[in-house]
Length: 343
Image 1: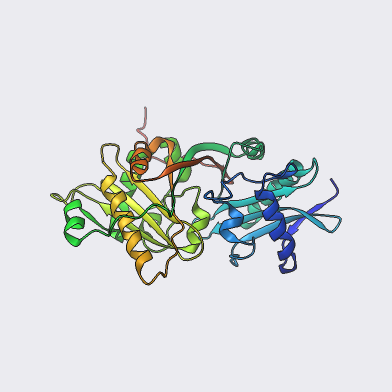
Image 2: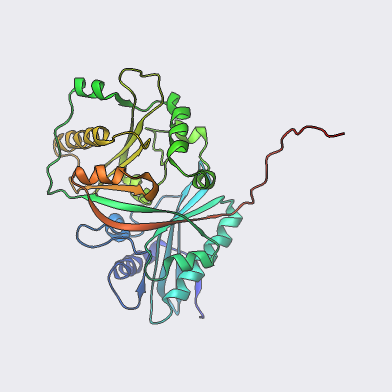
């Protein structure tokens, strides 16, 4: 292949919009991350309209150019607080060359990330079009799967809860002081290999209700268009006890679905906090119609069952299953520790 990878320019906008649109369709020569698209399914193009539409100064967009024609794009969101990069779009179109185009884009990203001090690279993709194999060839490892659930706008949302109902259920907004209990909740429901790979710090948990994306999900790219709110559920009779469940609610500000993420201990029935979240969303949508009702997306990790069943009881349906992959750009070393001396 004689083409080259370079940073996108504003003059590429129209071509990139068309490339992104074609890649999300079932085109024989097109490849993408395979995120759900068309109709009630949500894809990167439909979320962002144009690849540069929501571009931020700390984000990156690379293109593959061959003979003055753009045939590939790679879009990355950078989390400056954690030095983590998330690939949110990887598209290519071209007869027989789309696989090689995407691999060259990923390889270029790895080299550029090493120069800029990236610690981790994340991506969520479908099992189709050789996506997992592409990233594993570039050094990524699988560390989980998420089931994507969707509740359509045709289903009426429940009424908002009264103050008495909220107090009886033990639900309240997250506070910075909840950082340690939230970290313990996450560690209690997440396999230790995943805990080690995602490597959250207390400072990450303290940022709840302040634009935090912790815990991360495959839908992290849509959160920049949502007003994030976080709530916890505790034992109403013993508020000082461990946190039972956590709710993240992203209220959409654009033409996109709302976001719901639930994290709960295995013995906790999440029906209450799910119902509270849907009622809260109904109140947000009802305020003068300021928030569109395009349905609600809820990602659930495979090891977080039975949260998925409680969501299905609340009107959600199975939309897709996405694979989570990650590549660490640093080498882990053992922490120094004191050991007994042996004479």
